[in-house]
Image 1 (cartoon, rainbow, N blue to C red):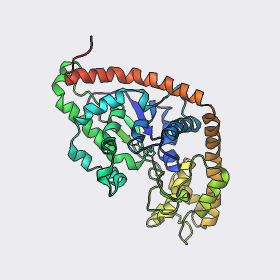
Image 2: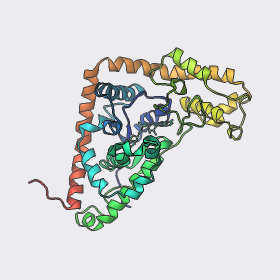
Image 3: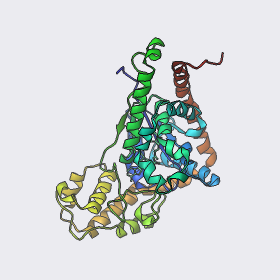
Length: 346
Ligand code: TYM
């Protein structure tokens, strides 16, 4: 595999409340990556409409996710912050990838099966094709690293399969046109840390999600201190005190989840948390978790509020980001079209 320039890409959907899972599994890690890599962070509005969205609400949500990126510490001068629909190369490459990806590959996607549910015939074609657009998001920039939560693992495997098949199917043209062995990198998913899969506060076996009907199942980034405290205090637990070793968290999904959340918020490991709180009752541990969560999330929520009050500023950040994103994607997609054999406009 030839060396590709290291580049980070990730995306977040503007569909409903951003929660602690989005923050700890993704956005907090996006912030950390800026120190080491050139990064692009995208509000994926084309993905959002795979399920019907109220237009005014979608506009609001695009700005709110952008505000969350900035409030969490993504620096738009250093990283590229933009929304997907402003950069036409995403949709364009997705079409070419539609002709590379196989039906059998998409049929295996578990997230489509979960989201479409029993009424599969009535799901949008876009929902089915969602992972192909995701591959286009990443590969339009030839991104080498993608930080995501664990629920995106299968989609990233599909991205790797599409890159590989494109490189193989067009190996001759890729070589002849001076791109060497491969045009697309085989992107590395970056999934990890104590919060790769944050679970519902009501049921430690279910993922924390925007679509859970119970608001008590998740902490939203816009929750105030009282809201955070109530949700943590009401979180489901078992009757035992916390164990001193991580092995003691096995088969205790709720305890494991709260310890993982504490660890991720405090930038330590589960082991570190248990070293301090092993033997503690949940009442005491939850008190400490409330203080920590309020201290870490409170300022982000407040800053989001301040930012969304100035949509003009957010829109300017997005416009600047889109121009910089397009400057990277446009030559890549022009090269893809040459590789495929299209005739360029002269
Ligand atoms: P989305 O919008 O559902 O979620 C955004 C990010 O949050 C992570 N996440 C979680 N992490 C830990 N615990 C949880 N309970 C939890 N819930 C969500 C997700 O893994 C994700 O990293 N398909 C993507 C958006 C996307 C994308 C991309 C991501 C579109 N194109 C290209 C990376 C690269 C999605 O729906 O994320």
